[in-house]
Image 1 (cartoon, one colour):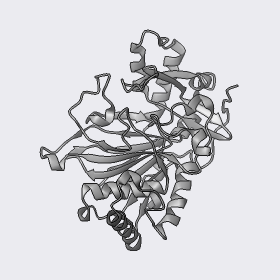
Image 2 (image 1 turned 90 degrees about the vertical axis):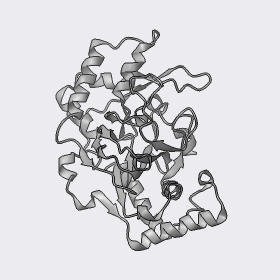
Image 3 (image 1 turned 180 degrees about the vertical axis):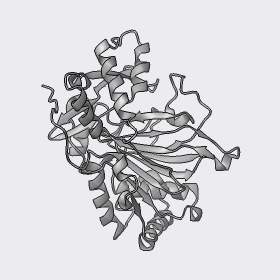
Image 4 (image 1 turned 45 degrees about the vertical axis):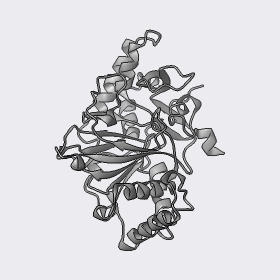
Length: 337
C-alpha cells in the first residue's frame, strides 16, 4: 500500500531559497585549527602509503572537526538537506591531495558508492566534449545546462578544483517545498507522482539489468518525504519500445512539477570557488548547474571531484524508491545492518 502525504511539511527541510540566500550560516567556514586537522590527517594517510580508496574514517582522524561534521551530517539528513564548506587553501595541495581530503571528509559522512558502470567511487566532473543528446552521455561529462535533478545516492559531495571561465553557477532547492506547492495547487494530481516512472540508464547497464529502471518521484515512509527526479532521463526512457508511453496525466503532472521548480524564489544560488565543498541530500534537495564557457588552457578547465555517499544514520526508504540508490553500491537494507 503506497502512503501519500497530503499535509504540508513544516520542518526545516521545507525552505525557500529567497529566505536563505543571504544568511550567515549558509556556509560553514573552517577555522585555522580545523584546516590544521585536515592537513595532519592528509599527511598521516600519505605517510602510511594508503590508497585513497582504502582510507576509512578511522584512518582520517579529525579530533575536533569530526564533532562538527556530525552536526553537519544531521543537517544534511534531517534539516536543510545541503551545506557548503569553505576554507581549505587550494593552492597548498595537489589534485591528488585534494582528492584524499574530499574522500577523508566523506568518510565522516558515510560510505562511497559507485557512480557509473565503471565503478568510479571518486568521480571527475568536467567537460569531455561530449554531447548530452547522445544516449550514452551523462550530464556531468558536458558543459551543458543541467536542469534540477537528484543523483543516485543518499548524498552527493562535490569538491571544486577549478572554476570555469564563465558560468557554471550552482543552485539547490528544496524538493519538500516543491511537494508542498504541488499539494496546494493540484492535490488531485499528486498521486500520479507517487506511481513509478521509467528512467533511462543511459547505456550504463550491468549484467542482468534492463536498460531502464522504474521508481516514483515522491515517496513517504516513516514520517519522511523523499524525492527522486531526472526529467531528462524519464523522457529518454521513452525510446525503449517496451516502456509504456507517458500518459496525458503523467505529462501534466511533470509539467506542473517543472513549473513549480522554476519558481524564482525557490533556489539558493552560488558559485563554487576552488576548494569549496558542497554536499546535498538527494531525497530532500534538487540541484542544478548552468552552462559554462571553459578556459582554453587544459590545466585551468572547470574540474570538480564527486562522491556519492550512503550516509550514516540515513533515512529508511520505502521499497519502491530504494531501487534508485547507488549504481551497484550499498543499498538501504545493507546500510541499516
